[in-house]
Image 1: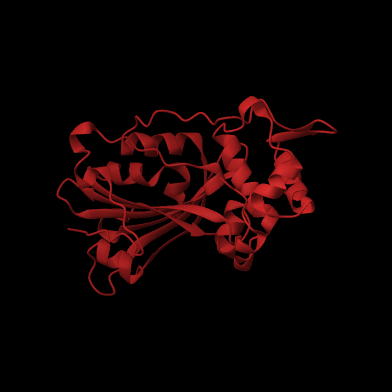
Image 2: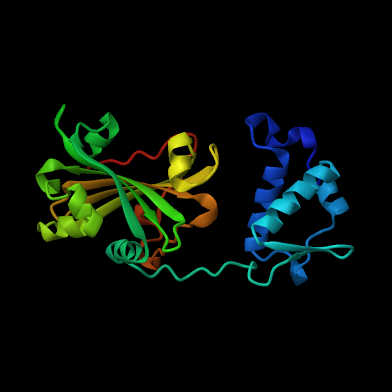
Length: 271
């Protein structure tokens, strides 16, 4: 099978440089352990595969080397570094609350903004708020201990349950803990996972390039009386994060297993 991709068929018209596209493809393949023996195809083979010039391939390989994923040995080729092979993925065994707790304990939070204001119409509808009714809006960045941004979170909570979610409180405790301390007991959760691109603000906060791919997780959490109490949107740089899910066999034929919706956003019904 001919795997060459004509240069004019790649996404150069969308603003992503050709060498960057090749870099993204090879980085993904390295993470999946697809190169037996740790050796990448030579430059000529990569040129044929992607239908690009040698200089474009060299720029992509240089970017991989700068990231520490490969080592270029003069006259011998390009080799995958020993610690850059197939990524280890833990078993998705945590509950939603355990996952929130793990994120809170393993990251450092920076609170960007906390205020009471009317949310966007879609958020207000999902939180079942009355017209012009305000909610607590909290915008935060969570970073790894080494300072690398892990995620940007954009949360909305009805004022009736979110009054204690102040800037001072959120610097000390996670939002879910503050709500639980007020007596909120979490029940049903509806999630939507999609992809988006980094606008200038998100790119700056997450330390990535404008237009770069982001994972977007929208989570609507209810209490035990099925009242929506938290609308959370989390943005993560695609190359630094993944979302793991485990679906019990008994629920594989139900909506609990998820639903793929094409050509339209997933409609998260509050009911």
